[in-house]
Amino acid sequence: MTDDWREDRIGSALRGANPSVLRRMESGFAVIGDVQFLPGYSLLLTDDPKVQRLSELSRAKRISFLSDMDRLGEAVERACSRLDSAFRRVNLEILGNTDAFLHAHVWPRFDWEPDELVGKPVWLYPGDRWREERFALGTQHDPLRKAIAAELDELAPPPSERSG
Image 1 (cartoon, helix red, strand yellow):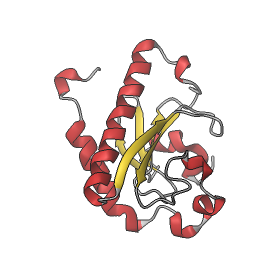
Image 2: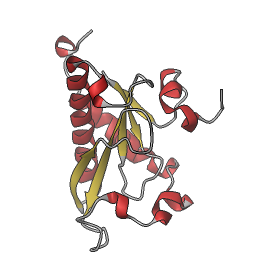
Image 3: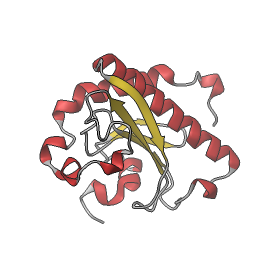
Image 4: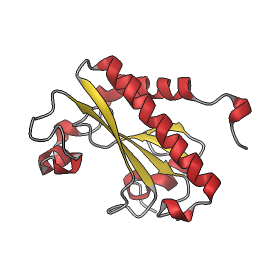
């Protein structure tokens, strides 16, 4: 087993050793992204590392995952719109082309993005945005982390509506 939580994101979250976890959700984990060139970028990770596709879940678990994705998206939207007046919208994506576990991307989008990229998928951003240290998640993102986590708490369903 490796000491780098990035090598086993779900396993490390299950063990309480993934520092990017914002909150435990019904279907998995809300995490803040490793890169923050679009501040507030977050993901929803399934809590079963063997699940690669949404279609591998039962209907009830699919609905739970999609509901959690919606909740995380709204939390990012609320936090980012409060912290940055140039916030535009949130993009939600389930791709799965690189990481072989079910996860959903929550991308905040802003008016200050370059004109040639603001209306396009984030995957068209240059490689330096994904690799440079200045865009890496760090302590400077703690207020953003706290804001998203607080919104997740605010949006949590009442105990009477939770499954279990």
